[in-house]
Length: 391
Ligand code: SDX
Image 1 (cartoon, rainbow, N blue to C red):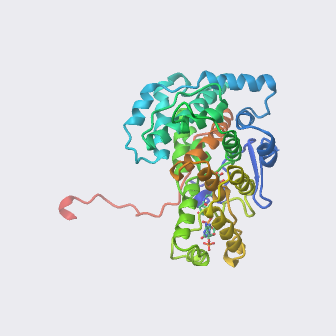
Image 2: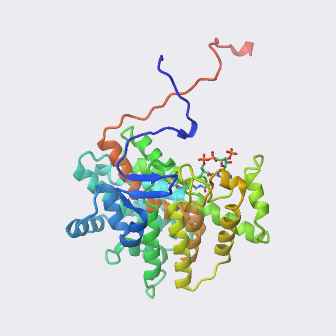
Image 3: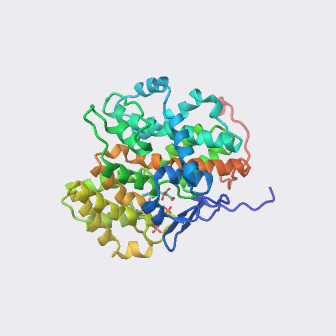
């Protein structure tokens, strides 16, 4: 090929697409969905409304929102044979692995929705997947604790229904609105983030025109990694380790700076944000509010605040512009809501689903070509086959 290949591992300086969905300003630490600042959406909107905004491009009016909620309710069930696949897993299976498998399995039970092409089909395919996804997410929790599955309900709203399917143990169960409101806000904050690793995985896999469910399953697998969405679980594990180690900070900060040591300060740093992640700012405040409202004292939250304070004064972090990201404080709220750390990344996936689908829809509707990068070859030059007797 005469064309010049520019090598860009990790695509640090590559724009993979044009997109009209989400805007990030890394220097200023700003985030907008379809032009609306995340601070206003977190304050004034709802997760179901933000789903519509990301997917359709505009805030819904009363009629559109009612129709969207009604459509979600129409698909609020999962084929019980998917439940049999769930049962085949051992209880210690990581919920993200279970979720990726069950999401891909939906293809077999929704053959018509596999590859929607027209707008109307996309609307229903998105509603179908979103309506089934919170059921699957709740199932991963029930599976982990060998609990019976709870029937989905159309009376509690999307987040309330999820919360009930996760936590209902008996008929005395009541939906705690403080918790549902906190989850709703967290899902809004996680809903999209332009071309991050998992959204890029969804776009790349989807660019071969495979189905929506399998493209999203690829995104779940990418999000699972501790360098991406899996960081929210790794942050709590790191903070618990620091607590058990006596709570000293400097030793861990120094360890994170040591190039020979692959220990990193989880929840710090970001490819785009060279300022505080605006979501981390909102989540940090929400952590205070939620723990206060629930009357919970959590030593790990105090450790997190101290770690942020000490790290942000450290030359290494200052010169590399390493700030807390979305994953640094989110686990502390999930913990306070009684959600186990193995479920934290499932919560991230549940929030991110509408963003992944919006990215997939835009990629298909703008007829993006199949993703197929080149390489710089560094292997052997041409050589002939060697018979076994000569090896
Ligand atoms: C998410 O992309 C997105 O938008 C993702 C996300 C989304 O909403 O989709 O925002 C969600 O994934 C948030 C990030 C969660 N991950 C973590 O918290 C894991 C810890 N963070 C790091 O692994 C890292 O900061 C990344 C993965 C987030 C970003 O990696 P980059 O952009 O490839 O940065 P890098 O590894 O090149 O780091 C630049 C420098 C290096 O030092 P030098 O080689 O220049 O001397 O900063 C150092 C790194 O060693 N560094 C860290 C560090 N993060 C970067 N050093 C210690 N601790 C860290 N956490």
